Image 1 (cartoon, rainbow, N blue to C red):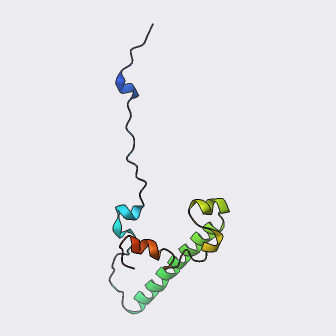
Image 2 (image 1 turned 90 degrees about the vertical axis):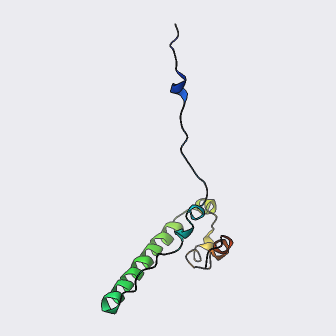
Image 3 (image 1 turned 180 degrees about the vertical axis):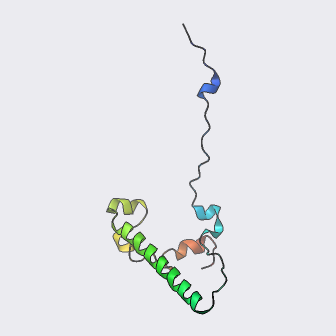
Length: 103
């Protein structure tokens, strides 16, 4: 006894995956959108709050990197000596220039 098997039961579609850096697909990914400058006290407070939020996010990311093992850091191309430089603009300047973006 044999069960009939249709060919469609064995077909599947692979997802559309890409292993290219996202900045290659979206060149404006690293650039911030231009915003209208805020004037007066409200603008100053808003700028200070935005700076604090960015600083806090950077501290959280630095703590996450510091908590990684040597092997995990090596997987992403870093070592312990790089951690203090990761968030400085000069760290990836060579990669950004190689892609033709303005620095």
